[in-house]
Length: 170
Image 1: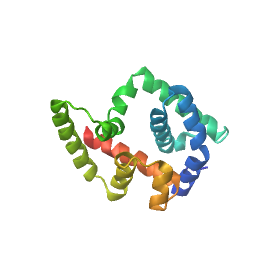
Image 2 (image 1 turned 30 degrees about the vertical axis):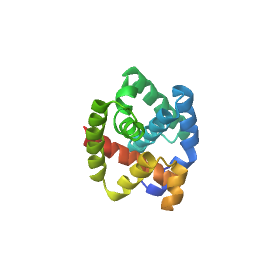
Image 3 (image 1 turned 120 degrees about the vertical axis):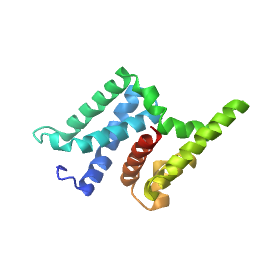
Image 4 (image 1 turned 60 degrees about the vertical axis):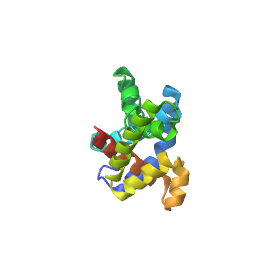
């Protein structure tokens, strides 16, 4: 299938199976943001482990198994709170934080400044999708139209951008 690492094949798989994996994650987590984050992680993990896929079995079965295991691992280790407090929640928190607390404002401004500096260290293609998604709060569909790129490509760029940003924040 896509064992050769071909970008076109990965894009096809992402487009073809995104809705199925996302709906399962949404059923488990009952939270759209967490579901999106876990779906992106699921595809990232599946792309990394594609060489372990046995073609005797249906691809979606293999992918759904990865999704379920990822959700179980994430909740078992209580990673949902810590993982999503990283790049995703950090961005969301500082974009949406309107607290009147002066001390909180100062800490928030310092953290936001650090976050913006770290975003600035990303390659332009990753910086752009992070800014559009979290600072301008555009949907994947809106970003794909704005950048004249398909939604799968945007999802992959966003996944990579968040992974890189997470590494820079730690």
